[in-house]
Image 1 (cartoon, rainbow, N blue to C red):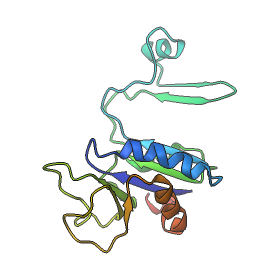
Image 2: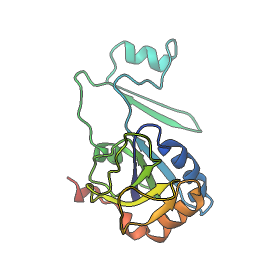
Image 3: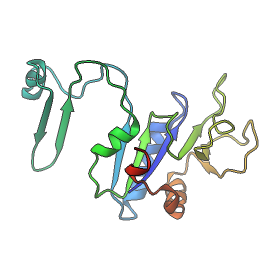
Length: 176
């Protein structure tokens, strides 16, 4: 599988770009997964549902499946410091691309999403894992030889990813 991160400040458009790149990759016949970092007490379950009740009763893991989807929820008794590599190890290995959001300091190759928010500094001059910048700005605050992609053209971003796909080939053993 190929893995690329999307890094940027809150409100820079990472989620919107990823949301628009997914169908552009799928239109090319590719299977896409997402790995996302969330804040402390996020929840995907709802009070009153069986799975929520099982977790509330103390289950370490709850896996629920239908003929359309599977979900795994795991409760940590103590805060766990999971890396993006822990999440990637959980994913189905029949996927073509994994788009990662929320692990901006990871050691994955990343596209920086930058809109020039006031007070926001670009990361690419100091992060050698950033391989391209997606922006809607006419110029960047610091010159770079990295490719500059149009943030408002997700098909072009997808095309660039596919064209450079060999760079993004991921092997977990390279990170453990």
